[in-house]
Length: 143
Image (cartoon, rainbow, N blue to C red):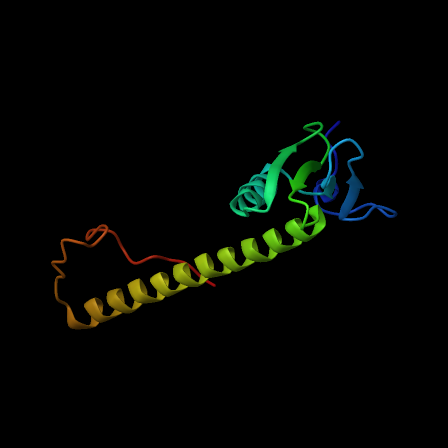
């Protein structure tokens, strides 16, 4: 079969770096970063996070080829900030946002499980009009 091995999706080949930067000589305060073994998911999140920063003038990405597992992200910043600094800060902020989302999700799962356990032990019916779905069984999520 002609399909590439699955490990090629996430194992960085010897001699390659996860992130490579190339300064743009034609545009001031601009650089292009090549991110290995990632796809549109991370690229779009990074682009959106970069554009929230008022010091970032431009942020855009492209995937050079669907069979290549990398993307290029171009960043242009204001004179007081470097593209590398903007990317680093955007990555840190994105990690914080994702951790916050994860914590909220885990708390909601815990709340729903606690509620379902209490309802099961009391044998009562809960009549909350704000409940998502009263006829749905408890969530089966393991962490």
